Amino acid sequence: MTAKPALTRNQTLVLQTLTAAVEPLSAYAILDRLRGEGFRAPLQVYRALDKLLETGLVHRLDSLKAFVACSHPHEHGGEEMVAFAICETCGGVWEFSDSKIEDRFSAWAEAEGFLTRTTTLEISGLCSLCRQRAAAGEAVEAGV
Amino acid sequence: MTAKPALTRNQTLVLQTLTAAVEPLSAYAILDRLRGEGFRAPLQVYRALDKLLETGLVHRLDSLKAFVACSHPHEHGGEEMVAFAICETCGGVWEFSDSKIEDRFSAWAEAEGFLTRTTTLEISGLCSLCRQRAAAGEAVEAGV
DNA sequence: ACTCCAATGTTATATCATTACATCGTTTGC
DNA sequence: GCAAACGATGTAATGATATAACATTGGAGT
Image (cartoon, rainbow over all chains, first blue to last red; front, side, top):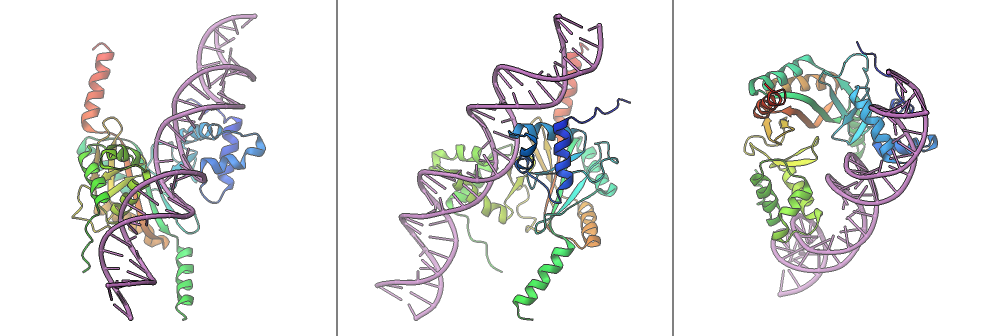
């Protein structure tokens, strides 16, 4: 069992930044937050992100072109499908996995002879809280 | 029942281009193929794509930042989850849907009070054919 | 000390997408 | 008919995301 190499300084800083953020951050947003630490170029962020993505400590949300720290870093070794729910209003992200979903995708892949390497499973919409707030807002607008 | 307005010239051209292509195309790739038709700026492509995406005639593959013509344009009115399998080697795309997968996502959403608006379901890897070719290639390299 | 290799720094550039504004043609209401 | 309103279009400029290319640094192993 090869021990994972410790994170480098840049990787640590990027991961900390993502962990501290409540919402997903773009690479350039991360860069801006790390200028005080000496970051100057996008590549410093992208290179750190590459490693963090490899090890599963960070996920990329394709639909947002943004990155989040993994909520369950200890759990998945990198080979499990993870799904995300993204609130369009508050930016919140819920990470979850469902073995049944995974089974269905695996079943399709097996039937087609497809070898799955990476998965992007993202649902976008309104979280419970923002939904309620939206409903309340509409009621006000309607003069109720 | 409001009849769908007919496609405009630009929309028709973009859709034809995507339909004719075997692989997903980026917006700029579409632009290049339509220069002969008078296209000059990315916006002409993006505007047409917006409409085609709205009506479900085209899908965007977030993981590739590219677009494909829908394989089943008549079927889904726009409210059904569609999943894609993308071959990293040949660029081929398989569009499929699975009510069980949809059910599981819906179950999660219902439990959390999440209102789903759009979904991005993409699996990336190797298609059956490319897998076979890769295996054959390795065998050759190994001197078998 | 030397080699090797990964991480880093820096500049430039490629790629993807949108803003802003002017123009044209149709439709709609009068 | 005419003008207001609207949607589609054309064009230029810019913003946002990501990578290429190359030089340098700093251990780890020998």
